[in-house]
Length: 289
Length: 289
Image (tube, rainbow over all chains, first blue to last red; front, side, top):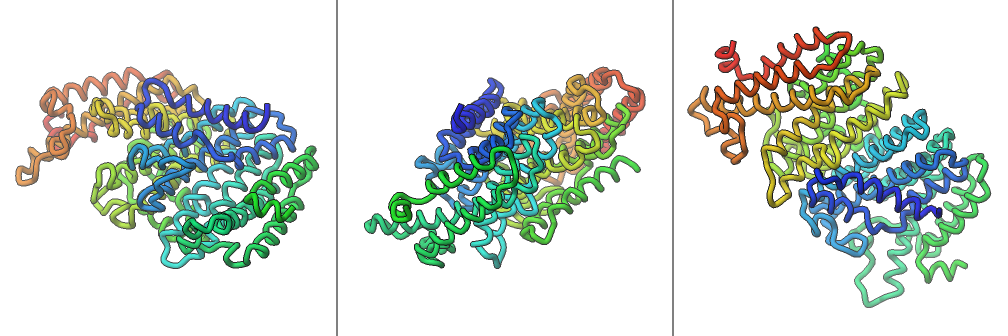
C-alpha cells in the first residue's frame, strides 16, 4: 500500500471513531471537514518514509504516528484561521471551519483534533507498547510549550518578535515531530532524527516563500503575494529569487547529510530529493532543472 | 504528603517545564494564571484517593494521572469562558484568561493545557510504561469525541439539545476520568471505576444546583441564581431544594455501592462520605446534618 493511502486510511479511521451516534453531529461534521480533503500530507508521508527507512516493523504504530502529526497540523490550521488570529475566510480552497460552521465549533474542532492525535497513538500502542512514551512525548513537544506550535503561534502576541523565527519554528516543530515519530514508531532512537526534520521544515518554508513570489511573477494581474501584503518576512524577498533558490538547495543538501544511519538510508535520500523538487512552483522547478 | 500538596506540586512542575526561556513569556504567564490558584482540585484529589485505595504503587504516575485530569479541566474552563461561548468576565474570583490577557492567548492557553495533560503522562511513564496506553486513552476519551468535554460543549451548537444531559455529561466525563485514571495508574483494571466517577459527577452537579439556589436564599439582595438567569435546567429548580437534597443523598449512596473491590475500599468510602458533605453550601449542610 502506498504511503498516501496508508495516511488517508488511518486518518479516516481516526475521524470515524469520533462519529459515533453519541457525538454532536455538527462537531463530527466539522472535524471531518477540517481533515478531508487534505493537502499534500507532506508531514505524515515524511513520517512513514522515515519509519520505512528504519524497518517499519510495527506498521500500525507508524501510521498512528504519521496521523497524529497530521491531526496536530490540521488543529493548528483551524485555530490559526480563527477571527482573533488570521481571520482567514478560506483554507485548502474552501471556507475555513469557522466560516463553514461557526467560531464555537472551530474552537472545539481544534481541541478535539489535538486530543484525537493522542488517542490515535494510544489505540495503536498494543503493537509495541514500549514505544508509546516516546511517541506521546514527541507529538506533545511539537504542539505545546515551550517550543511547539502553540508556543510558536503565541509569538504573535508578544510586543517584539522576529516573525521570521516564529514561522520557521512553527514549521520546523511539526516536520521534526514527523521524522522523530517515524523513527520512534519503528523502535529507533529518535533524537538523531530531529535535524533532518527541522532542516526539511526550513526548506519547505523557503519553497513556500518562493511560491508566493512566483505566483506574483507568473500572474501580474493578481494582487501582490500574501507574504508581502501581510508584511511577513520572506526568504525570497530578503535574498531574491536566485538567492532563495540557492538557500533551498543548501538546505536540501544539509538535510540529506543529516539522515542518521538506518537500513533504508539510500532509499530515503532518493525520496527526499524527489519530494523536495515538488516543493517548488512549476516555473521555478523547470528553470532549476 | 497530603493529596492537595501532591496535586499542587505536580501541577507546578508541569507548568514550570513550559516556562523555559524559549517560551513566549505572555503565554507562559497565561498558562500559569489558568492553573493557579486553583479551586478545590476535587477531580485530581479523587484520582489520588482511588489510586491510594488501589495501592498507589507508582505514586509519580498517580500524580501524573491526577494532574492530567485537572489540566484538562482548566483547559475547558479557559475555552468555555471565551466570548464565543459563555463570554465570562471572571473565573475563580479573578478576570478570565481572555480578559486578563487576550482572546488569542486564551485559545492558545487552552490548547497548550490540553497538550500538557498528555505530556505529563508521558513524562511519568517510566514509572510503569505498560500503564501509559490506558492512561492516555482515559484522558483522551474524557476530552475528545464522541463523548468527552469537547463533544459535551458542542451540544451548545446543536439546534435541539437537552442542556441538562450535556451539563451532566461534561461533569461526568472528567469525574469518570479521575476515578479510572487513579485505578489505571495503580495497575488496576479501570473500566469498573467508571460508574463511581460518573455518579459522583452527577452528585457534584446536583450540589452545584443547590449552591446556586442557596446563594440566592442566603443573600436576597443579590440577583437571582446564575442557572435561573441563564435559563439552565437545575435539579434544585426541578425537584425543589428538599427533592434535590434527597437526590444528592441517593447519588452518594449509589456511588458508595459502586466502589469496586480494592485493598482500600473502606477508607475510600469514608473519604467519599466526608468529601461529598463538603459539596453542600453551609446553610444546607447544617440543615442536612
